[in-house]
Length: 314
Image (tube, rainbow, N blue to C red):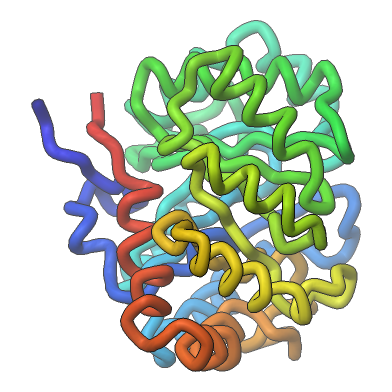
């Protein structure tokens, strides 16, 4: 059986080579109708942000921007080459609010096929599902739930994501609106569609203060992504360490992931004046080391992402 690999924009690598510090959920290129004028679409700015992250010890970034959100996979490869930072790209589809409805209609009848193709052959250029196939493969599938529930769009996309996972082995990362609908997603993806929990990454768990929900999600065996520290529109910081320390104390430290989830130009550190990607290492890492110890904190940035984003490529 083939060994597990992490599929980056510059090719497959051994999980041990992913690097010492990984930002497990972020965006170097992203656009949404919900954030007009705040698009992440500037290559020099992306290089500057990644360089600032690397100067603090960052060695890998997972970009969760799916099809239709300006993911700029060709530019991701350039950022990786210029900075030496490993980057994983995503296929998948976001909520309708973040995606052009016309694009959704174009891909609806071939969604699983498109996901598989982008994971195994190459990602489409310019977010055009009928455009040129780039010699760059996605390494994960990004989908999204809704606020305290799953609408028909979410269920359809998750069904396609599950089909693509079964065909390729790729992990599935989920946007949870304000940290909700976590159990609905687990019921559908894992209970109904047969995706193993070790291949599921539950995102935005820091956006909900429900510690019981976080514990129940952890008990499933899925990876738990705490992302978006110090975002102005989410009061997450004061909850973050309590959640991480509590989950580690109950035996779930090996499932924890951390990311910056930078989605607007203003949130960037290097060019926008925001916390950006470096905040994870400048502020969150020393706090986590103080609470958990140096090695357990390092494992959250190093070992956990290597397992979460590696799979036996089929």
